[in-house]
Length: 123
Image 1 (cartoon, rainbow, N blue to C red):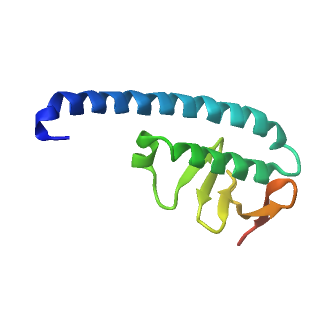
Image 2: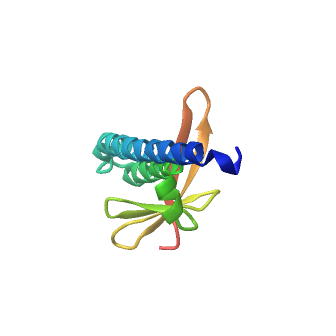
Image 3: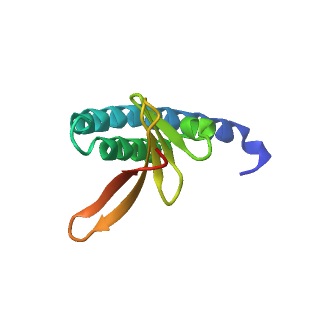
């Protein structure tokens, strides 16, 4: 594209803005559905694992959003209800409202997909 195609560039920017807005809207819907589905299990024995899963899914969905990517910290983190979830690369850290910290790792489970395991850390 040349500088003479300003109208076309402007139109492309407008289209990209609309696409980003659509992605942001869809991201919020999917995040809500994931949270509604997963939060039923938070009260059970695998509550921290469910929080870590929701947090990681939210961060993955945010990676599609231009707006969320701009405000993202390092390491990337999110809130899941009152819990804080940080994606630290090789592991995920979940901090409870009471300040307890759990370190979570993902693992591949043959024939089933992936799983997540969380253990208390430095408490």
